[in-house]
Each structure stands twice: as structure tokens, then as C-alpha cells.
Image 1 (cartoon, rainbow, N blue to C red):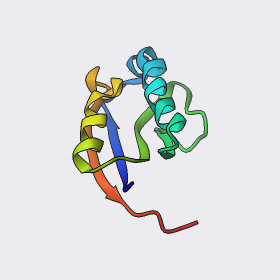
Image 2: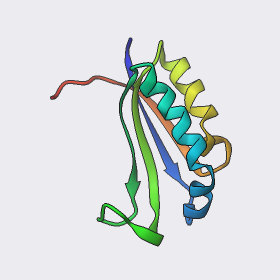
Image 3: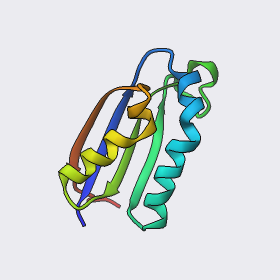
Image 4: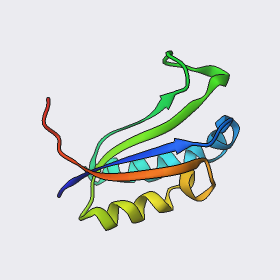
Length: 100
């Protein structure tokens, strides 16, 4: 199955809203893990630190297998971070894993 990168950009000052729907977001990602389709996922800290604290995050990256671009876009549009307005923009692109 082909890979797709999903890149979501957070609205400003989104930390409280992000935390409120994080469990639902992670449950959807766990479903990708359970299906063996997730390559990687994680947020972009707003500052250069593993735990940005109240600075929060500026967005997220998910790389996973989907049947096609339309399926990846549909999955991204149903993510709680998209549906609840944490993401102001979501870009979905085909991704080619080369290394490692």
C-alpha cells in the first residue's frame, strides 16, 4: 500500500483545545498502528524542546499507508484535530520512504 504524509498546522494558542481531544486523536492513530499501517507520527513542538510545556505545538506529522490519496485525505479530514478546529490547515501528500 502506498504511503502518505499528513501535515497539520495548529491554530495559534491551541494547546488546551489539543489536549481536550488528544485521546480521540491518539485512538485513531492507534488503529493505524494495530493495522500495521503507521510509519511514524508526532507533533511539532513550538520551541526547541522535547516537552514544550505551555508553548505547545505548531502542528503534527503522520506518515501512514492508505489505499490512495483520496483515502488519506478522507482519513485526515475525520481526525479530531481537523474536525475540532485545532488544525487550520492540513496537507496530504504522497510519500516515498527511502531511508533507513
